[in-house]
Length: 311
Image 1 (cartoon, rainbow, N blue to C red):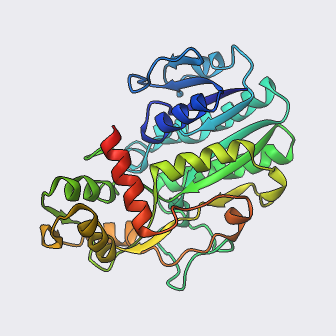
Image 2 (image 1 turned 180 degrees about the vertical axis):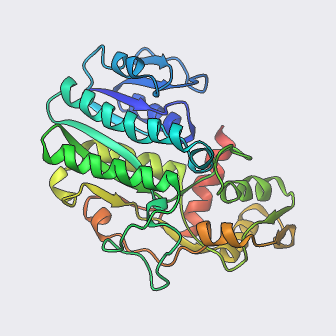
């Protein structure tokens, strides 16, 4: 089985490539930079820009059995360059779907969407599979448009689509560029190093989090799951740990032996509304399809700290 992974040089992509190779799959990895990947006899590297249609076509010079599509212009970058975001996050996605369908009949196409599609008007009573999508940012709108394309091309028989909306995935390298929610990653690095930090959200901020380890597990699962377990639109919101920021800091303090007093709070109302107002989450459709969260806040922290220390 040969799997094409876009965004393969990134935080999540590199982990997926490693997991697929360990599972005995052949991988075609593409990104603008691929220096994070270790050479392997079953790994083909194709460095380039997905905004280039001829480059996209070249990715299918060999038969591709499945696709994991992670490449994206992230939130902050999409807001500052909406036209580029549309070209990469929508046009390239639709083109890749059609190229995949032409490469292999019933090609499994796993698409990485995001919880940003819910917008910043999260219902205080919680989010479930029936919560309407109300994107406000360009990034979120483009993700929702690609979700629609995934479902449409699946119904047309072009691909066998599986879309998964990612929660906050931790912990990217400290100071990750283009992510307005970078503070959720930075806090793990800061506490592990015993340093201080001022959070741009309040102690009462609520977030949905998943470790990179569990995220990779869910993507690997998405490649082989029975598509009959997916909802008709072929998109689910991944289960995630719902945690209040103060409780996360408390648990991190215990895990790293760093004082909670090292963390100060100076809430930015805009960031708090966008990234710190996620009420409880119910993900029945995802759980029916076999997706899982880390299990507990403590296990999320354990998985994340181990991941950081292994890099």
